[in-house]
Image (tube, rainbow, N blue to C red; front, side):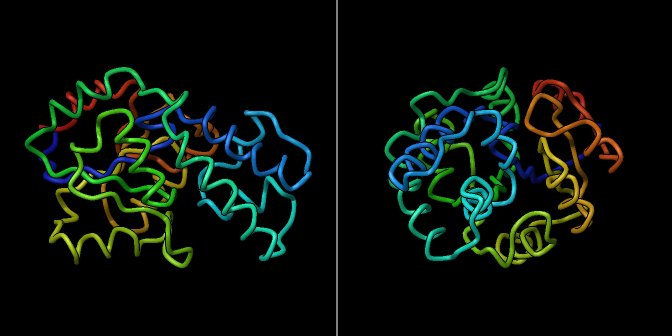
Length: 214
């Protein structure tokens, strides 16, 4: 076991399965814009690098005016329906309770407001000291700056910090920032993408954090 004081949790694929609500909001935007709707699987395959990146990939369009319009449609729908079909992964609440004496942060490429409304709807927002979102496209995972900013703002010790996430982008963030990493295999990440990055820890269930964090 390791002595970690601060834990940075990803959201999608790590704490929650939000694929249905994300897809519903995306297809709402596509319908309004008279674009073809996409399957949950296709939309989910584009999750990971921020909201506007998701828009560009689902639209198949990099025109920024169109991305702006789609993002507004998506955002309004998602905020109103963020927890309609979203569910917590097994043992999420139990492990957050176990870690109640640790500093816990959300580190996501979602907009912070999206993460907050979903986590509040699921009753777990109160466990986190701060939700650090991907509102600034110039500083999102896997850039080291997302951790460096948190270190400066919240006086976090990198040597006693752990990033818990399900995708290669989460492990890459930890590697880039010099922070320990834990890959959760139950999410959106593909083994062939994540395993070669050699995360410090690999777990199949959040409850396994009990054997990692002292």
